[in-house]
Image (tube, rainbow, N blue to C red; front, side, top):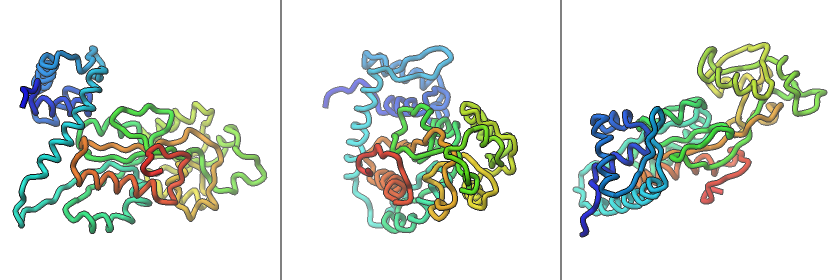
Length: 315
């Protein structure tokens, strides 16, 4: 076997840095010093004769063209390593359980994932899934950089950029939704001036989510004059929409099917992207099973209405 210009440890550090884009966070994740992370990358680049990361003061390190090509080949290398490791003989009573942590949107977990979990666990008895359900927020992508989540399935507004470690799966409709009574005798979409006079339901008061939403509304000249409630729970908000209590920013795909007759789109806003994340580079059959379950549970459910699907295998 030819001498390789890298060590497995250097590859591990490189892979972590690609995920976190932070020398400090990689050091914390790997349990080594920040200086060690920097030195490992410096030596790796010297041994390869390439510059893998573009480092600029005050900015996160970003992959160069050579770095992206090296990362692509690393994924293939890791998959081959997993395949070789699978030849290891297991004893008859050896436990094969594994636990993965999944960051997911609240609406997707309750409506599309939880109802199908029993079948997944039956088919994969050695796999445990721990879910952390969160409302859409600009901080979700940053949280993934810490390396604490193995998978993620989240919605993000389509006007925001998509980081390289995300895969874009589909596009769903977003806007201001409310009971059809708010549209009686009026032409849709309602004008911002009229929307501003209607009762709004917002995320938790003074939260980062509310601040983001108000800034987003301002771009559309939407300035709520009357907020009648705050909640972090999508199902509570959906129930309030159905009762005609108020209006709210919502995604069509997570509106419960039984409400779609009474709750309608009053004003279109930016649509939402469905994004997935997987920390493992590929090659582990159990990771493949988890990813396939998460994505198919959503995209192949007829109640998840999409504008377009970019994941060809699920289209």
